[in-house]
Length: 374
Image: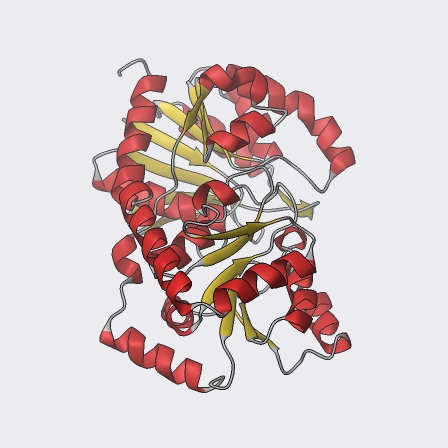
């Protein structure tokens, strides 16, 4: 089986969807599926390369509008590759790829992983909605990260019979606490030894709600480590300064995999304070839970609370509420026993339900059903 995966970016561009597609493509090839990737390049040139053994075409980019890369060669490359594949796998939202598939992809069946609704660009979203609905109706099957998203998305309710819940998976062995990790974590924690540590990891985008967490820090006796960069970085750093929280909130920038792992084992709990439906699941929650960290997240009607079960693996609060966020965080900080219990339950849940191998096996079965081979 030959499958072409479509999206806007790929490694070394970092992000939850980019990381997921990279892991998925590599895992599929390890199982004998000829998985290939078509995305856009960050520059004007079209390049073809093998990344982790996966053939990747990155078409030249001419513009970048409303978080959307524009690449005219993407259409030509899709037409060329369409003649050789059995199945196209789109990762949405990325409107240019969806338009290209509608115009050029009628000769091959397509499946979609529906990562999230478009939330912020409302005017653009209204123009995009008819295109998206048409694409969803034509898809053989649609993969969604949680049952909650099917019922809460205005785009998925009407096609729920075509939707399948496919859990994202992570390589749990990468999150083991080795002696080296313990040493790194000890050194990091030693820099902030006088107070507990909270951790946020992610791209600093508007929907992540880090500003809400910063404001909550007035009520929390802890220090906050923020790993990641993005368009909101300068504004949120300025906010921390304006709130006189420079001695409690630390922006560490981008970090290596090893540094992120050390931070997870150094910190007392993980916080994901996202504020809207652009946060469909929060893979960073899975990564934190794999390290035995309890999680505080927000209820968005998406998959955040599907992953982090309130009262079991962590606590779930309303979004955009610094006081509620602080109260939940403080409840966990004062109880090491509760943190340990929730952390152990989170680790178990990830290993049993969100493993890398489970994701690959489920995806292959998903493909086979779409092609009528199941």
